[in-house]
Length: 461
Image 1 (cartoon, helix red, strand yellow):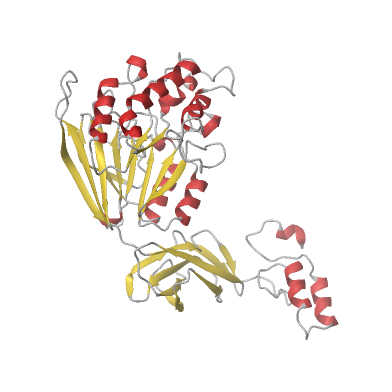
Image 2 (tube, rainbow, N blue to C red):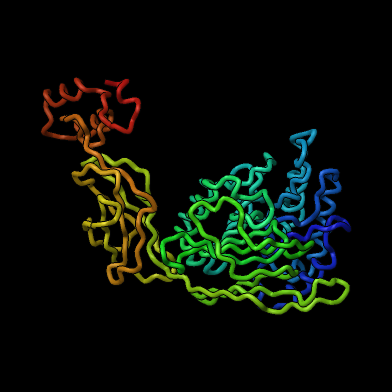
């Protein structure tokens, strides 16, 4: 993985990029390459045709990889929307985004075409893929074909992708760092949205986020403050295929509740190699021996970080923010990452944010369990799913949810959801013992509700 190969000749640092392409092509163990943005200069003054020409020259320089059948997964950087830096393009339907799709989203060259499974409007810019036992996500941070300097990602799409994944290894990449190291424009411009991205990676067993934008190599651990470094997500900035920048040694952005610890820094050209061996991951930074590009570069390993993925069940619902009525039914759902041999799970709930727990059920590991909501009145509720043979293999709701009693006694509220509606009528109609009085009670409160979390209830009563 590397990125930021922009330069001057044809908008590309051709010397370094060609050297890296040969370096990659000569590695016998390489499956694919990630290149999250700033492939080319894409300067504001460039026309769409010039920009597209730069992209095509870039793909020719990377030809040794394409020709060898090595997949190259690219994403957009801020230079790929260079026509929108100062003023919007004259024609909003004819932008650099169109040129990008001509190169990386077209059937004219299948070798260049990227996965098209991104959210609407971000196809071939945001996408995901599985490779062996790994799940990889490339995130566009510039609003797809809407083509704006958004500095944020499509979080609902990412959440859905991560929820559906069962691979034990999760690798997420995008152009801009989540935590500012140098450039003022990055994901920390919107810290709440950045935190949602970071938490989503952590909650789904991810340990890494790869980016560029800052032109150096920087490996940092984002300490989440829970005292366990083994679940912290690491930020890798690998903007090392073009011009190089100097770092001040700090992370001066809005870091929210995270503490950034720099583990390695280098102002050198280079690349990051990820090796996956079953559940073990080794990430190694290969650094060019000199910044002088007039001589052939030798790339030597320097920073190395290893970790082991721990396959486990991951709770999907209730996962925080739900409001569940006493007596109603809720389907608890979870997934199990590949590699975890779990036959039975224990399902527990807490009414006090995890201080104490009560057993719901010991059940087969089917991925779902129907739960009748118990009598309670608490907004500090959690659910936990754990391996019945190893309690350490567990996952808990990401945030608290609420269990509430209906404040009114609805005799005809047969499904206990605090609403008198068609669902109750269906249940009553199916009851062979129902009589006229039962239907009269339902009619007297028809379309009433007593859900304290539904603002429209007062209008219905």
